[in-house]
Length: 386
Image (cartoon, rainbow, N blue to C red):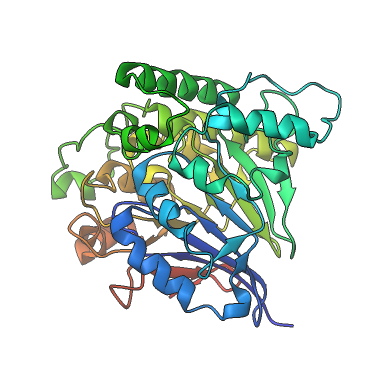
């Protein structure tokens, strides 16, 4: 049996929409991570419509966090079961963060009863996405509880049908507590009844307060070609980004880091915990999808120092928030000799990294979509982009 482990970075404009395929190449299992902004929904729907009709039940949908450039496509997709259904959905919605949040006890957690689950889900139906997920398998791999990394003990690991192993890196409990506080305050300011679903979807969908700050000044070409480090940061403190679900996906001995928009200090800590569990100082990875579309506010020297990896993926067309930041890409190519950069768009933000003087200065390679409307893919079994 020929095996596949492949990631596709669909053309999701300024957002994320990632499709994983693994297992039997003739009939692979699939995982969808985020749906991009609503303006990119056409690419997502076309890709799913191209799947054979008997292969449209996906193992998992991960909605990393509430920002519009990750969630809006999912809002529409969940109304189209003819395109895709999901055996489980991971998302920390209002029904999860509104409950008491605490670290797990050392004792094994009992599966919740139907009565307890019904009480949790009827409390407040946070946003439209919560309304649309409700009634489906929701955080089933976590027994219906919030998805987060405990402060102590091993990182949570879940294995999907077909053998894909997912290790959770983010969020931590304190990030969900901050999200609940911000979410509640937004509702209070708007004088919105949390049970009023229509008002909630109008208020919270794409809310600017949950986004990162605006663009930074771009370095000069000479600075970008220099071997002197460009300053990263200041570190991202956006509440929604801090709540982002980030994972390591492992299959057939290959490891892929999918970092969502997670905060760099959280990732540096959890990657360090994962490496330490193997007795290593750094974690070997076959590819990393950079956090927050290559933002300099979501990358740090500490995070880079936890990883041994030659292939780095960036999902953005550079619009709206002008990602990726040159400082972040510069940090990668300086830290990783011969780094390979895979961009799902050739744009004004990404094209300079393919210029011969830039490649000569840093010794990296840059890859772009062959078809501008198709995004880019990486075959993790062979290491070949397409």
